[in-house]
Length: 376
Image 1 (cartoon, rainbow, N blue to C red):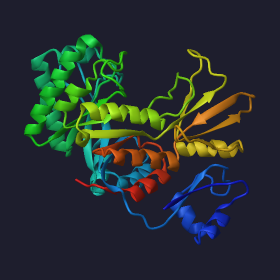
Image 2: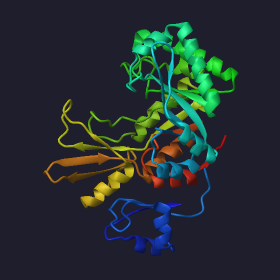
Image 3: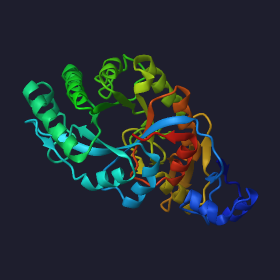
Image 4: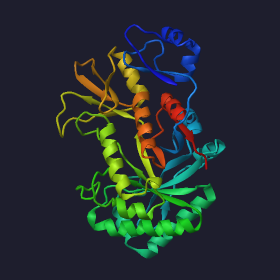
């Protein structure tokens, strides 16, 4: 497989001819949102024989309302899907989610589902109030774990993903003890536990997002961890790549210094951001967009896609109908290739996509060319 970057004046027909292919073959292989209106700087994948770099476990996060066509497109390239998500109330009762349909579809592809537990309340809102009660109460913990086991056994889950963020320092010990209790009990029944960890670069990193995510201790307890190596560019932050490669590498370098590489999954974002300019801290808010949506946007405004060789990420500028300038950072085949290759360079246990809700066919083509996807 090759990645061709579109130059001025090129068409799909011309690119196909240059690579001894056909328009129909490239159309099917790439499934581009704009095949007849290519953008300068856009990627076109050229099919060919490939030698994978090795085996990799690949996990995709999703919500039960995922579009079925998008879901089925991703499943052949996945080992697991992690379904978001189950919450719990202040009495240790599990709050379930309607996941039967997405589990059945995953299983029909030989993809094993993972149950996700988050600090969500009865209204589906993120809240640590219930966590504060349950984490510090052994009886309520036992009740919650018993409920988790019942659901896992009934629905065919193979593991549990614990996704708890913004945990204050005074709750750290109770939270880590909860992880240890859950892992010990679930392991007895043959289930594994994955814990999602914020993107830290040192043990002393300050901030509510980081201080209770103790890489060394949680990494020793959990069976596997996901390092959330994205959100460097985020909704209220200054415009930049969502997951610039040097920043991803800093997180991974710290991660492998505290946690066994065989436990680590590298997070990969499947989205981008559109910032209005000029950026003003505390005022400007970026809009989340899909990677295919970014291509359509560039095509609509007839603008060139640029590529930052340091961040290893594409971006472009455009001016909207109101005369407001925008900058968009997103992911393309080149940025995904760089991230997957980085994962193999350590090597890590696997990759975890947040999330697979948006279509990105080229991603799965690149992944399949580089990885031999492990199946459980």
